[in-house]
Image (cartoon, rainbow, N blue to C red):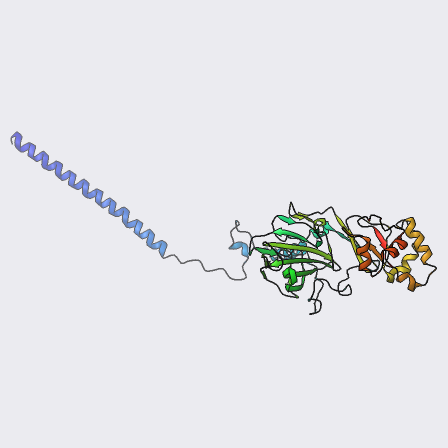
Amino acid sequence: MNIYTIGCSMMVGMMLVGCTATKSFLGMDREKKTPSKTVTASASSTPRPEPLLQDQKAEEVIPETVEPVNPYRLDKSASMQAKIQAQQPVVTERPKMQFSATESANVRISQQSNNPFPGSGELQIAVGDLSKEFCYPYPGKLISSYGYRGRSFHSGVDIKAVPHDTIRAAWPGVVRMAKPYSGYGNIIVIRHYNGMESVYAHQSRNLVSVNDVVEAGAPIGLAGRTGRATTEHLHFEIRIAGEPINPTWVLDTENRCLKEANTLYCYNRGGQIRVSIKEQVGYMPTPENLASEESKATSSVLTASTAKSTSSATKKPTSSIASKQYHYVKSGETLSHIARRYSTTVPKLCALNGLKSTSVLQIKQKLRVK
């Protein structure tokens, strides 16, 4: 046997050994895979656990991380809601007002239909209280003030407006008047719940009707120039018992808000309404309240002259006391004006008040006319 034969024999032997080893390796792999399939099959054949019965305790099925339902949580939430509702502001019920056709016919009506005064004849309105529900009627520039304009008297303020802009109610109330009316053009009068009234005029269109209930800021009309007007504007008035007062006592027309520091002192003196932002002394009561007021003649609120006239009046019959009538001088008035108004003469006025025919009258001066 030569060297070539030996070499071939060795190569053949090595190949046989490699095949045997490969076969053994593949056999081991099959043996490993077979047991794994058996284990899977046995696991899948294992029966599932039966569901828990209803009488079993909840702790056995609810994980510890899940909070059990609190049966009192709903009740607690309901009580919290009730507490929140209790903290909400309670809206007081508004007084009901209903106006007839007679009451809606004119701006000025009888005091029997609009008399906010109590029995004492004195009424105080704190402007600060009016700010709780308030809306500036129109955010425009003041172009005309309250008072005399030549020989005519301007009973409100004029606020420049853009045509057809919205006019809004200053305070909550009920519409007493809404229609075209003389020089006012389209007018709206709102009676507020304290007896005060606000007037809006020259609208191109009214958006409310008589007996409509409005809140502060509610749209009531569109700005215009109907009636006696030379430009689009809002004519705004404030009236107490039918008498117009200076709106700038209430409104700050520059800052478009209320003058909350002011107080309106309102007096009903024998049917004559007087309003001021300063408290008045020497109050002369109405005839209906005169008897009760005479017992207070020595009160500190009466001046010496008023106390003297009151003490002398007690000696006279009530009828003669009730016949007395007084007038408070307004800007531009003279003795002759006042005499014509009360169907009397200048000499009689001078005799009743200790004046001369040439005397100069002061604004708000008290004159006896009868």
